[in-house]
Every structure is written in structure tokens, then in C-alpha cells.
Image (tube, rainbow, N blue to C red; front, side, top):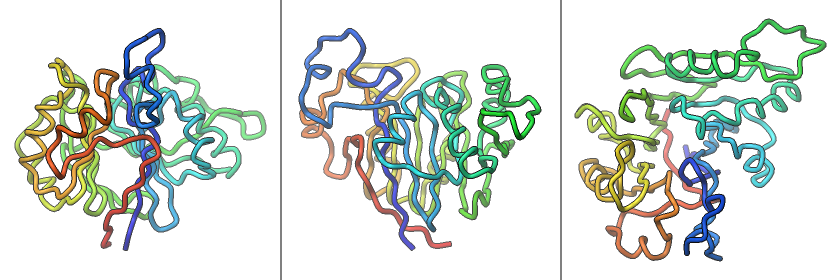
Amino acid sequence: MKGKILFLGTGASTGIPVIGCNCKVCRSKNKKNKRLRPSCLIKIKNKNLLIDVTPDFRSQALKYNIDHIDGVIITHMHYDHIGGIDDLRVFSLKDNKKILTLLEKATFEELKKRFDYLFKKKEKKTTLSAEFIFKKIEKEREKNIFSGIEIESILYFQKKTRVLGYKIGDLAYISDIKEYKKNIFHFLKDVNILILSALREDYSPVHFNLKEAITFAKKTKAKKIYFTHIAHEIDHNKISKKLPHNIFLAYDGQILEFNYEK
């Protein structure tokens, strides 16, 4: 069975163009240098699974005609990955159901602080906020059947922040990674398509730069690797020419196919 993944956004936390920036990339007319905050839509078995809910989600949903969401998969608690969560209310109201959401336990606790109103008891006739069913991931590595789809997760770190990477079929999504255990390569051993964050060429204390991402990618057996979470220091065409033959810069609106044999 084939699944599809649509890149809703491939930019870093500021997106591209960056507000107030006059650099060549931010002024570029190349559509592949226009990047919303990082998120993907998984399409499989007539289901729509959203990876992260960015502050750009409303624009992303309208641009790509997203008319239903069957589940949300959250990587971690940073604003560029959860800032649009309240915009999911249109789906819970339209479909009259709570939205299944898979997330790490620390992310769940942070959501309760930032979006406390989502966790208060609501009267059905008066509420206009989104409603959720949260599935908290407790283990370092875990397998779940989520909205009828088998999803595996693994814990790693962006410095002190706990982050989850996900695997669906032969596709893996590993974003905002900086520190990890070697068992992540066992987790990725049967992956053919790897989506991996790579912020910029220069060193970053909290993200892989290009060199680190390429080194990590080469340790996997993935046939194709797509970099995401890209900052405005990276020009799409210029950097693409420097990458190994099986490594690519993802871009907004790009669609990939993957195998799901469950």
C-alpha cells in the first residue's frame, strides 16, 4: 500500500522570508525559497494525519485544501510546532468530534500550561474551542495504532527539550534533533525515505547544521533523505548542487510517496 506525505512547511521557526530581513534568500523570487513553518500531512488509507500544528496552519490548510484531520502527531513543545493548535477547532466543530492527538508526556504538560482553556470542561452547546483526545507517549521507543495506522516513535533531544521522531511504514520524520542515542539507527534500519532537519551551513547549538545532518543521514540505510526545518541562510538551488546524490532539500508543497505494508 502506498501513502503520501505533503510538505506543508519546510522552514525554520521564523519561516522564509524572515520579517524585516533583506537578504538574498528572503528577497528571492524562487518559490522554493518561500518556506512556512515545519509541518507535514500524511495521507494514507483515506486518513489525514498532521505532523505538528504550526502558527502557519490556517494558511497551510487553505493553501492545500485540507478539509479533514483524522489525527495530529506532535514532535515537541516549541511554538513553531504547536502554535496553531487552536485553529484545529474548525475540524472538531465541523465534524462534531474530538481530535486524536499523539504526543510526548512533557509536551502534553506544556500544552496544559500554554493552552489551559483547551483542557477545561466545556458545554457542548457553547464551546468554540478545539476538543482533543490525547494519547501520551511514555516510553523512549513505542509503537501505537493511531487512527487505524501503525506509528512507531523514538525519543531524542534538542538540548534539554524532549522530541519525538516518528516512523510510518518505510518513512521516518526526524526533526529538531541535536542529541540522540545510537539506538536511533536501529529504529531507522528499515527506512527508505528519511525526513531530517538541517538548519543551515554554520554551527547551531540546538539543531543539526548541514554537515551534521549529512553525517547522520549517511549512517542510515535510507535511499532518499529530505532536509527540512531550513533557515534563510540556505538558498535552495545553490545548496542543492552541493548535496550528495540521494540527499535533497524539501520544499513547501512537495509530495512524496512511501510504502506502508500493514
